Image (cartoon, rainbow, N blue to C red; front, side):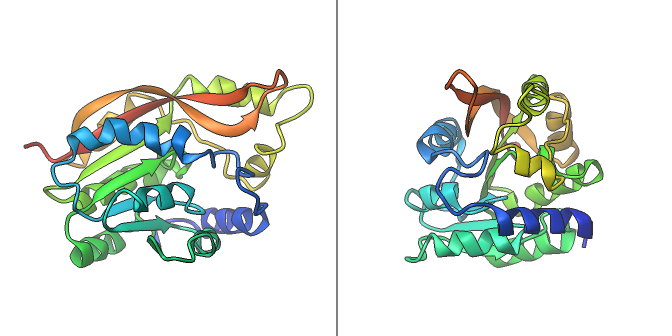
Length: 241
């Protein structure tokens, strides 16, 4: 596999230990504050909304279930089997399908495309959590599964989020309760320069169709009681028409 065993186990242990309560995970904000805002930016660029939609890095499936109410076929894919167990448990009606996927691995991305054909992809905050050496391979995998007709929406914390996270982690009281487990399990957000994302896309043979900035809502609150939001950049991408 392309990912290291340490990286995979970090995610497995995180999801095994995470509380079950809604909103207990740092990034697991309500869909109306996250994916709904992103869809307003993504949907105008879809060439075929009827294509299967893959929620890549779906975690416990909070955003996946929202997507499944709006698209005819949705697949939540994640590296962590423990995360997917939670996603299935929260979706007893089976609105979406779920599977373990290492999108960095070329063979797995190719097999998914062979099965589903071209797909649309939604990916929130995954690239910056990857090992640095895997980031281009991840975007290459996205290029494989979108094929000729699919489109992808990628949103990542921007460079400006670095100082926000550093301030949270090193404050006098220590990191907030929902950020502390992320740091403890060794899956702290990495540092992806804003300019790197379009470079990864171009290298994968994709074209940036739209981009912009948007606050990325978390489930945590600061000492003053306001919701913590991270600056983010988003890109809609696909093959050039």
